[in-house]
Length: 102
Image (cartoon, rainbow, N blue to C red; front, side, top):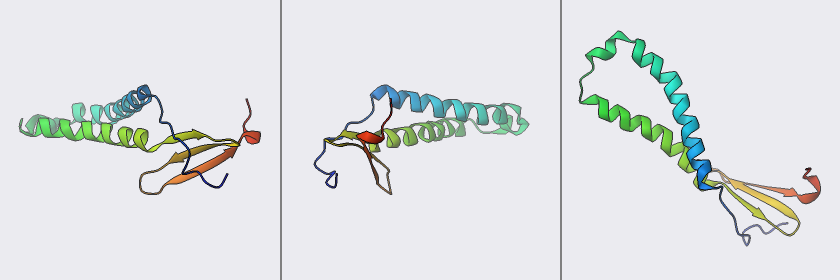
């Protein structure tokens, strides 16, 4: 299968986006949470910085999950399954049906 541009690519279900966000949010919470709670210097942080830090954490969670979801696609061709992914470096993988095992 040489021409993959004519195929109709499908994205993952939108719930996969929520799962990716939850996974990243859990990771950020488990890593940053104890660091913030156990640090005595946090009590001296001005209240003005708290919303900006919250926005930065949300962006750290939402942006990667959204980009991953938006840039991945799968197409079912006549003789192969085609998987496309990547933001800066696009990668197209063609998997012949004979190589897929159930």
